[in-house]
Length: 176
Image 1: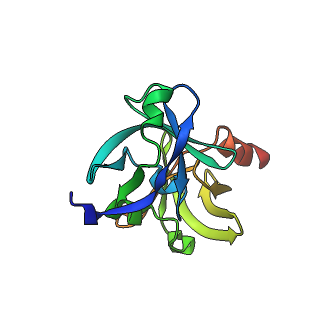
Image 2: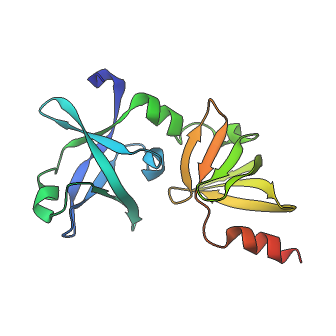
């Protein structure tokens, strides 16, 4: 891939802890923009170098990433200030900047349970987006954020999610 096929999403701000994690400074995106990505690309000597994402988390509003093969504080420190990129096609597929109202009619697919239903409605509030879908005769409300949203596949009209433990049971059992 050529450099013009990537979009800069931020840079590595600092090493985090002693196990090789790094803290990202993101420009206009959040961790949800790359939730379904396997790699982030770092610009090293003018080239895009892929780094496999082992895990990522949000710690007090900061995006923390653990890359495979980066296992010490020193390894992580060596990456400081490097620019972080995603392939442009991947970012546009996962971009949170599109209107979430476009998700009505999308299939909701959980990582473990599979197909759950179809998005009936979307509520956008400051700092919060909630989708509604029917499952086993109950209306389920699911907040979308970096922990629940894996990716959005526009071409297939699919919304891939990770349900919080017990969410379905709360809605299904409350109706009895």
